Image (tube, rainbow, N blue to C red; front, top):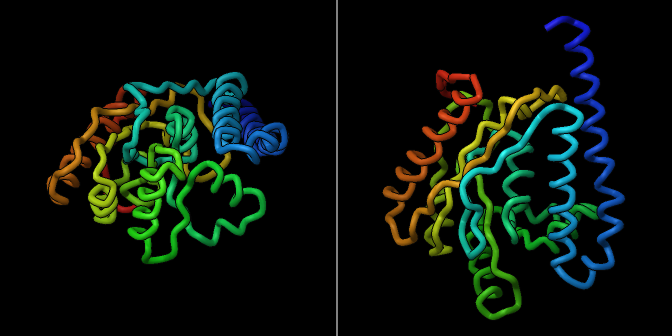
Amino acid sequence: MSGLAYGWRWLRSLLFSGLIYAAMLPIGLAYTPWAIMSRDGAVAAAHTWCRFVRWLARVLLGLRTEVRGTPPEGEVMVAAKHQSFLDIIMIYGSVPRGRFIMKKELVYAPVLGQIALRMGCVPVDRGKRGAAIKKMMIEVRSGRDDPGQLIIYPQGTRLAPGVSAPYKTGTAAIYRELNQPCVPVACNVGLFWPRRGVLRRPGTAVVEFLPAIPPGLSAAEFMTRLEAEIEPRSNALMAEAGFPIAVKDGA
């Protein structure tokens, strides 16, 4: 790629980043009255923003996004490969009632904290995740909260394509506490939207919802199966995009 082409791509990526964050304000304001009245409004605002980001990526950057498989609609845990902010956008935008576990301190962040709560995110104190999840389940079963899809990242952080990191045992604890099916998700998005930096690359970013793992497995069985589902499929998606990966350890 010539220096001019690289510079033009970098400038478009910078413009894209500015526009998607700037769009949060008008979209948030437009949906505020509905969001105050109902969680539906907060979810609709977030879904609208996700659609806008995917549309702008295609138009401005030549970055297409494809969701494969069947996004879950019932009460499930979604355990996903995490390569960049784009997989969050694509997964959340594809499920009807997604929610995340978040640090309790984020509740006090202006605007963001309240929107996250209205979306159904689960605030937790350090070391008290199990209690927070149990409280969420009680509220869902009593009708005080809506059922949804709890989205987690079993490796705990964003990883560059081809980087290997262990799956954290806390994932099995959440699986046991929820006693729900777990839907694994593979992706190749880090090839086009890296975990760090401004530059975005054209191509087709894919997230793929894989067949659900039923509840009731032992922790060891579940963790083995989860990794065996996500990792080979993510590598296959990266190879399909023309980037065969030699997996290496470390973040």
